[in-house]
Length: 394
Image (cartoon, one colour):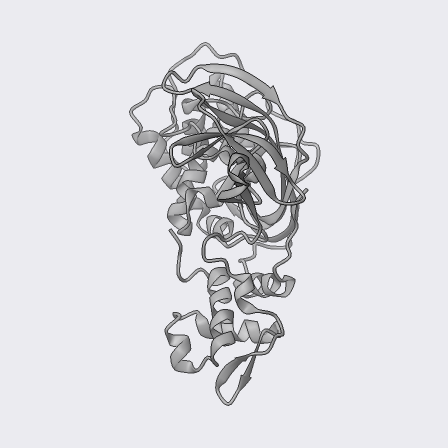
């Protein structure tokens, strides 16, 4: 699913079009109502030049090199069968490679199982061997995120939402062997792979101290409820941002601001506007989360609501090495959401949990002079000027 009016994607296609033929007014109309404004941004970035009412390609770069029709990522790893003269049987983008084709892992291709013998990070190649095994593997990730420059901020939902730059780092620290059909955990192996780093954009939300204190009055943990909201939010964000579920990620952690913070980020270099849309429609996003959790018939939480659905290893958050919960507390998430959205207070059924301790503040959240809206023109212009060589890798 792709939004054809996403300005970050549309800018790349306008460059390709201008490289082939000059873009006149009637041509721009074919690309939608935003094309005129984007063409002017590209002209300011020295990519296009307007002459006699038409926009001409004015760069020495090859425009199509910046647009990949198969994947938004421009760096891929080749997956080669060592028993068949290193024949390439598939590719995987650089972000997911260490999580999908790690040494010792099982790679599935056309219903056949291949065991990964080697992952060459410098040559961007994974060497696999066809083997019949009765299990698959699941990566165990250790993820971190660091908030960067704030582009916009606003008070919303009894808290403060921000949009800005972020650096996400993660590494595949181990993998589990899980038997087909029975789902038995039959093994666990550690890995020594270097971390991956991704410069992207993120939306992050800091609930108010009152919101974080509320679940403790019912013997619940606020951070567990926030993790449950995060799990639903990464599934709901594609509905408001018109993207695929695998285009976005999320983390809940406290190391940036000393208080539990929910991050939603784009899983592409420099971002493609998905987290930006989440920031703009954050209240709507929380309402979708509340509807999803409230309408789920389960009692304690499940992968259909507060549980993190298993999609690809890049979205797997393992309890052994991370701050996540296998199935977060559904009541804690509902207590938070009802308060954040000014709904009638949610009173959970008394349980056996002890009182939760709220994290102490180590430093305040970043201050901005006043709430600001995201400038799409600034973001698109910055992305174009930075070119196609983002920091993604080791």
